[in-house]
Picture 1 (cartoon, rainbow, N blue to C red):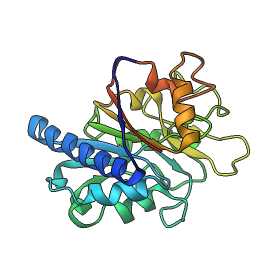
Picture 2 (picture 1 turned 180 degrees about the horizontal axis):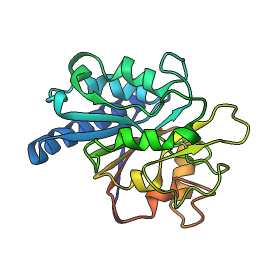
Picture 3 (picture 1 turned 90 degrees about the horizontal axis):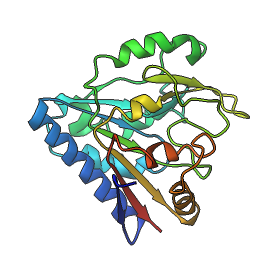
Length: 228
C-alpha cells in the first residue's frame, strides 16, 4: 500500500471540492505534457457534488476525453443512467466541449454489445489520466461486485455484469482498464464506508471485497479522500 495517499477532511463537501480541484489539475498537467487528457467518472450521489465543481475548471476541455467507470444498461434519459448524470453535471458549461464516449449502446443487453463498446473506447486517450471512484458498503468499485462472478482476468476494457438480484445488467470498466490509468481518485464518507476501506487494507480475496483491487497493487497511485 505504499502508493496510497490518504487525505482526511472535516466534512464531505470540503473533500469533494478538493477532489474536483485535484482531478482538474491532473487533466491540466496531462494537456501540457501530452496534448490531450482523459478521465473516467462514476455515477451515484457522490458525483452529484464533485462533477459540477469539476465542470467549472478553467482548462481546454476540447482536449479532454470523458468516459464512465460503469453504467446500468438503460438509456441516457433514464433516472438511473450514469451517462445522463454526467451530461447534466459535468458536460455542461465549459466542459461541454469535451469528447464524451458513453458505455451504453443500442441493443438488448451489454453481453452481446461488448465488441462495439470496446471499439468505441479505443480512440480515447489511453492510459486515462484519472479514474474517479467511489466504494459501496459491500466493498464494490465500478460494477465489480462480490457476487458478480470472477472478473479478475476479464480481457479488454469492458465487461458485462449481471448482479444477483438486480434485474438490470451493467457494463463496467475491467480491472485491466482501471489499472490502465495514471491516477485513481477514491472518495468515501461515513462510518460504514470508512470501515469497509479499513477492512480492505488487509490482504485477502478481492472477489469478496473488490476494493482490494486498487488497495493492493503498485501500478497506479491512489489518492483517497476521507470525510466523516
